[in-house]
Length: 523
Image 1 (cartoon, rainbow, N blue to C red):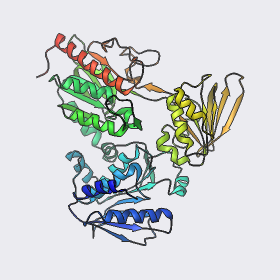
Image 2 (cartoon, rainbow, N blue to C red; image 1 turned 60 degrees about the horizontal axis):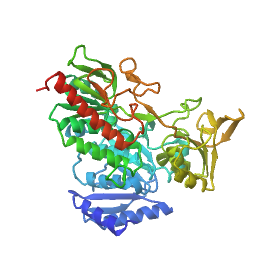
Image 3 (cartoon, rainbow, N blue to C red; image 1 turned 90 degrees about the vertical axis):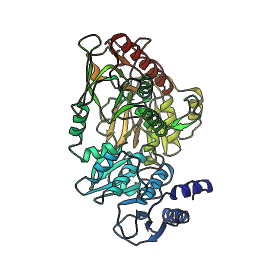
Image 4 (cartoon, one colour; image 1 turned 120 degrees about the vertical axis):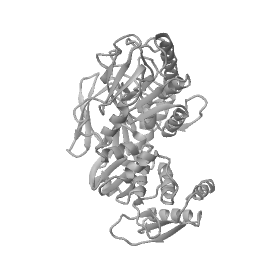
């Protein structure tokens, strides 16, 4: 189950346990249960603080196991075998139940402990989902800190009947007290903020009290992180306000083209970005979305950014690094069946469509890579491309065309997503050469048609291109004095991580140059 190297690593982690941990397994006669029993026995052999017992509780899922302390009923449960991306979640759950402290901010942990109410969470995940661990780990930690919170992390591939019954078409999907709570990546602070109704007002009050910044960065992807680091290194007062620190990187599986890093995964890269930013005196305000920009009324004056929570942040200069998001098809049925067959993350949601026919919309690198990935899981993939030919790299096209369960349709304009009211049943497209309208019966649609800049909130203030990208010059100036921009939200071509980081650095240097020419830095 666990190879020798992994066992050695886990043994070293388990030496941090401060109190006994009991693993209570509820098993059946399935192959998954046998795998789970083997895993638990291996874990028990790595620490004298861990014991394993088996229970026959008809009220809980089989196979599953509870992580608790002897004589204490904590609420951390895994249903299935948490390997793959969820192995880290298992390790952290063992450590936290065993008394090892969390690295989360002390005030956030205290906020979890003070939540009032009964909260019973269930999260459906897949072992290949790189978005799922953040959600699973956050809810596990909450259930360790607060005895009125429980959490069960459920492998959707093992509990297919539940996936079908509860209409789970994407992971991670979270239920709270039996009702749908959310889907997709969520951080601990975001979850707690939704439960603690007064959190937004308290955050706004704190933000309103902040003194003006020399450089205020809006956005926390590679461009925003690089901008903040370069600004902070100049010794000036710097802040980041990010809707989601890490940005698109969090949704990227493998990164193999960031120079000097041969290979990493998006969430790991995003974590490294945050660690690097926190090495400097940067005021990092995460989970904060901007909604309005107010230019300075005089040269060298303060620029204001109004946030969704009502707070107003002020800066002598502002760097816009809001990135981009997946572009929607914009056809009837897409919104209705989003998360019910319409998906945007093949690696996350692909396992939920095992043995089923699906379509991929888009013939660029992302679309072709998605089709190749899905072909190993689903029964059949139909790739539809609007243009007369695919736009992906030749090596990817050769791989795609070698797969026996893939069809490629070019000159195809998707016009409608069909469904039965509960889930996707098909897709309608028009042949752009003949004008003929055709329908494909299928159960999943993965949309991979490029990016849309996150700039709607800037309309009427900052000059935008016809594609909604921020217009900048060679030094990242916008048309608004003191406002700079960098990364995927701008007109700079080739939306790549390495390019965004370089542009963010350049924007910070330009902002510093602007500051020394217009005003003295803040004290």
